[in-house]
Length: 367
Image 1 (tube, one colour):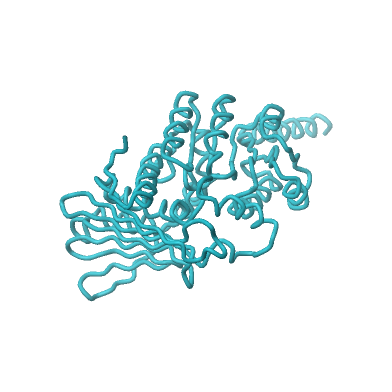
Image 2: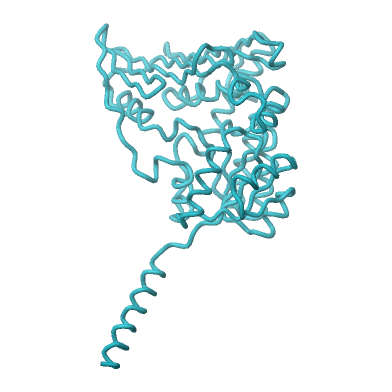
C-alpha cells in the first residue's frame, strides 16, 4: 500500500507541475502618472486582475504629486508607489507601462520606455502635437516596442458593426462622416475631488495639449480617417463659451474636405447638455448611425432599422488584454489604437489647431 500511495502522490505532483508550467507568466505592468481622469477606473480594474492573479501583475505606480501618491496608496494597498517613474522602471523592470500623464509629456515617457525596451500605452490623444506623435512612433519602431493609444470606443462592438455595414456597401459609396463628441465639461464630473484637481490643472491649458479641440475632435478625426482616409484640407473654428470656468477653447467645429465630393465634419464640445459620442456615416444609398449610449441604426430613406450591436471576443473587448496579447504573441498593434493610425489622427488635429489660429483652411499633408 505504501508503494501505491507513493505512486499516486508522484502522479499528482507531476500533474500539478505540468499545470503550473502550462500557465503563462503574468505580465508585469507599471502605471506612470495619475493626472488623467481615465486612470481611476483602469487602475481599479488592473488592481482587481492583480489581486486575482489574472494576466498581469502591477509592480509599481508613480506620480509627481504627493497628494495623489497618498491617495493611490489607499486604493491599491501593497503596490509600491514612487515619486520618480524612471527609478520605478529601473527597479521594477516592467514589460508594459500604461501612462496617464499630461498630453504634452507623452513623448517624454515614450523616450524613457524606448530606452528600456518597455511597451507603452497612452490615453487618447496620442500627443499634444503632430510632431511629438511622429517622434513617438519613430522611437517605438527603432526600439522595437509596441505603442498603443487607447480610445474607449475602440472596445465598443457597435463601433465595428457600423464600420462593417459601411465597408460591405450596405449604404452605398461612403461620402460623408459626421460626428458629435462632448459633454457639459470635465469640471462637472466629481467637482472638487482630488481626481479632478490635477486633471483640470493641465486639461484647461492649451499649451499642454488641453482644450476641447484636442480633447474631443481627436475622436472625430479618428472616425474620419477610418472611413475616408487623410483629408486634403482642414478648416476649423473654436469658441470660448465658458471663460469663467475654462481659459481654453470649449467648442471646436472641424470641416475636412477630401475631393470627389467627400467630406467629414466633427464637433467637439465641453458645453453640451448631455454626453454625445455619436457618429453617422453616409453613403449614396443611406446611412448608419451609432449614438450614445449603445444605439445603432441603419437608415435608408426615411426608414430606420435597429441593428444588433455585435460582439467582441475577450481579447478585443478590453485594452490591457489586447495589448498583452499583442506583446506575448509578437503581433503588431493594429487598427484605431495603433501608433501609425494615430499619427495620422494627430495630423488632422494639428491642422485643425493651425486653422483655428489662422482662420484659414490648412492643406494636408502638413509640412
